[in-house]
Image (cartoon, rainbow over the protein chains, first blue to last red):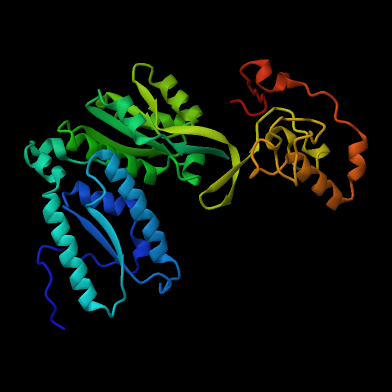
Amino acid sequence: MRLQYPTDIRIIQVPCTGKVDIIHLLTAFEEGADGVFVAGCLEGDCHFLEGNLHAKKRVQRVKEILDKVGLGVGRLEMYNLSAGMGPRFAEIAREMDQRIRELGPSPIRKAKASLPKAETEMRV
Amino acid sequence: MIRAVGKPLEEVIGMVQDYPRILVAGCDGCVTVCEAGGLKEVKVLAAALRLYFTQQGEPKQIDETSLTRQCDKEYLAQLGDRIDGYDAVLSLACGCGVQFLADMYTTKPVYPGVDTTFLGVTEERGVYTERCQACGRCILADTGGVCPIARCSKRMLNGPCGGSDKGKCEVNPEMPCGWQLIYERLKALGQLDRFEQPITPKDWTTSRDGGVRKIVREDLRV
């Protein structure tokens, strides 16, 4: 189809959105992502039955956390579309790109950029 | 097992906001099973705190760990060589673990990251219900395996009260009447005659009425 969508979107493949965990989404924001969208299969069409429904709940939970930490709920969204809906994917990518541009760069990335590196390290 | 729920993020932020170096310490025991205070919840809370404080322009060192149990000294001792590197510890263990951690590291501020709620079971993932109040003298043998102390809102030993309606408790119409459950269970067991023998007044000294409880097992001591 050679559809065009914004080049600043990085795709991370997972076998099913049911694999996407809360910590994956939070880590993306910690690493400075301006926004994240989770693209799951259509509801009712999950190959693993309920993976996309689990993802929906986790996205909602992370939205609540993002709201409480001051990042707002707009930087994260879940969409449902099938693997055959390429034009819709490109449309969602453009829509999300536009939304994030309106929200501006991640305040986390901006805050980290103004700090010495040692202060932003994570230790486990 | 002990059941707990994570404290609201705002409350946790309020507790630790004055400390630049914080260790978030989970417990791999009960609170991991109910997904309130295991390593995963530690990672989520630590990430949320880092996001918050970074966003506020006050980045902190917020590190993560989880101990096998926080209610045993040998596991708490594993923090000995690193705890001095932190200004405060946020423990996601139950109230027992938080206190034992504070007992061992007396000069280190220790804060609870969860609300310890009850002793209960997993009805299904994410749904937990109370089953035991640890009263210290089990009477389940007399009540068909259904505890009136934990499952009757009034802890009646000889129920039901007059508030039971269609098998539900007057305290909450969603809550099953404990004594209805006992009746149905005894009926299924063919032991309804137990209702003819009232349960005698309970000795509450084995419960909280007797003060702080302690078990000493001489056969186990080393």
